[in-house]
Amino acid sequence: MKLLDKLIIKDFLKTYVFVVLMLIMIVLVLDFTEKNDEFIRNKVPSAEIIKYMFNYGLYLNNLLTPITVFISVIFITSRMAGRTEIVAILSSGVSFIRMLRPFIIGSALIAVVSFVLNGWVLPGATAGMYNFKMEYLEDDSQYNYSNLHVKVAPDVYAYINRYYTGPKRGYSFTLEKIEDGQLLSKLTADRIDWDTTTNAWKVKNWKLRKLGDMREEYSVGEEMDTVLSITPEDFDLPPNHHETLNLPELGKQIEVLEERGADNVSFYKIERYVRFMSPFAAIILTFIGVIVSSKKTRGGSGFKIALGFLLAFIYIILFLLSRTFAEAGTAYPILAVWLPNLVFAFTGLVMYKTIPR
Image (tube, rainbow, N blue to C red; front, side, top):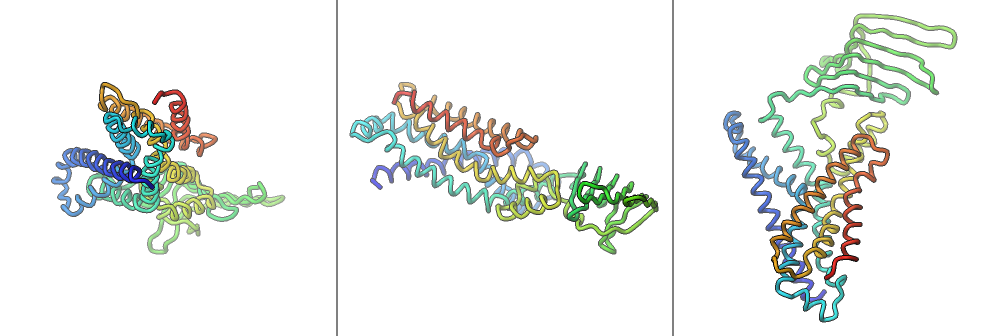
């Protein structure tokens, strides 16, 4: 690696760290100012506030990576162009692709760090952030769920119309046993409660139908114990639970949900797709940033930095939209998740071919 490569990588990473810290500090100050009255009213300990700010800072670092990388690249490249350094580099016989190498190496280092943070560090910070909000900022930490479908055994399926985590109670409960496409038994109940003394579920106002080849058994009752392979902890999950699991935990949770036939398994799969997709944004946006800002202009770097903000925000908006489409049940969720990277990669190639340098 030549001395020039080392200088560019060093300058790139220093600028990236500075931009990250600057944006994070601005957002944290605004967030603290907004929530300060709630901190005082709820008597939140200072240590918990500091811990929350640290976790929120890690969360922001991941969210702002496209902006920070793009702005850093444009700032460094436009400054080099303003000093006629890029003209000198290209005039010495160095190709534009060769000049890109230190920028790509720097963005690859950022991508690797981002992948490690996304896969193992950030989930813990996100969980801590949500726990802090539930304990100190939310008035009601109880959540309710609707239309829950769970596979509780190889041929047994449960359905709960509404479930409340506080009292550990569900309404309009159904338990069906199906073999080879045929319904063998069906248990319905108005309510299902978790009994803490026996650690078992009780169904209230139940009706049971057992279907045979030539006969049918029908029975009713007010209360009955039932044995299910699920517990309240399987329902009492925090909001955005998929964001609080590291990659190994995410894989195990997907296997459990697939085994149970759960409806929300797609959220966990999409989260895993995002963990592998997002680091590549740093490399793609670096490539575009160098192309946009490598030509010397009279207006200086101000316009290029503004353009960098605009393109980075467009990327983030496109990412949020594509993730929403994926979670809404699109036929190809992995394609929807990767759409921002594909669009910007294609845009970068078009710009490389068309923009004069």
